[in-house]
Length: 580
Image 1 (cartoon, rainbow, N blue to C red):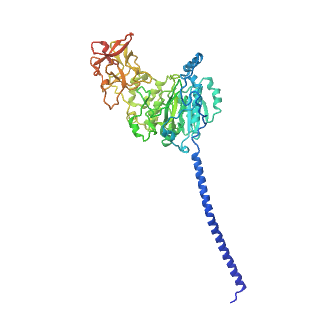
Image 2: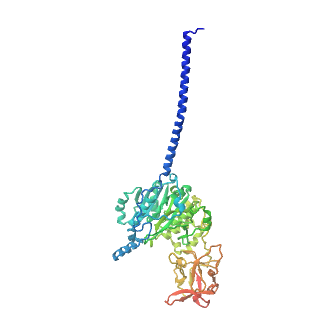
């Protein structure tokens, strides 16, 4: 059969189309197959690139501070926190003594130490090896208020912050000059800090005091966390990260670093290498350090976990800016400084926050030889704290501070409204839940106050503990002053003579001794040793059963009056006493 030309071309055309389709299909399949390894390789390349970028980000040293310290120079005075002992001639010694008189700190020695000195990092191993996710930590503004601070101690504080704080976390360092009148703190300081990154200087128009000066700095801050430091500090590397990490975990926590001591005379840096002390108070509302109680040790899972503290020293702490504002910031009715630390401590705990010390955060602080300037409003400040937060327990404070009853403390109505608005707990709750180890005085009628001698009616029992040794003295006689303090004692239902105006101590007589010493009192749930049991007899004598003797006044060889234990004689007025 013959095929027409038209049909032939139609068949050829269809064949070409079919062949073309087959060819295109082949090419597509070939290209697909040939590009699979390349695509897979490209995909893996992109993945490694992302991973490599991620690894680069992780390996990037985000702990890098704003400024790097220079290399360690062991020939530099005070390097690595070592004590400085200078050999001085007469003129230099006079300059040193003048600096101590002016600043209550050996500024002459401080001026010989580098502003950038290194401090040896003796923190616990777990602290030094801990890793942080810097991208997730909040930023902070460090606020330092100062008044007539010495040049070298102030600048060393500034450089210490800049050289130990990760740049990614430190938003700014705000200096608040609280109306200083020293010439070097004027244009000279402005010129100096103008060359430093992230440092701002704010000056007040009048003397505001620590509380309001800090609040002025907080007003200008832009960081998520406020970190307050004193103006004579040195930070140990790694000090900032633990505070910010904990605040990120719990925004209602106020965090304090471990406060290490920098000697005011030699500038030796003494680091607390083990478990740090935590804050408390005595019933005169004076801040006290004490050891961590056993129940708090048991609560913590690791030795580098934050430690709950009933109170804080007040000079150094970090707090979420939002939470600080919610909590009512500072009580601006407080003047200069003193008492604000206990007020804030009571408030944060009673208003359902927490106060903690982080064992991985260390900051050294120069504790001056004496207060460099007066704080005449300390009693007023503590009265404000007592009136707002201590409820019925404030009576124990007033017993030990008779002048406080007459103190004018201003308007506290807004602070009481704040307490109501925040629905805060009672002080009874605070004592039972937060500070259960504190002995609450019984202050039974007629069994507390000054113990006056009938034999020498101008004299009262007195206890004046030496510095840094609360049990290192004996009971003595001193002119009755009616101010509580060293002459305030409590006779408890357990027959103890307790001294708890400054430190919680109990009068004791040890075997073979005629003097009356002081020892640490047992806890409320512990038995009372025989050596601290006393009996106030109806005849007025104070009898010690274990020694079978009574307290008696007597004349020393030098002609002054003192007390000792003697055989009891109720007819001897030198052995007759009464509370008043």
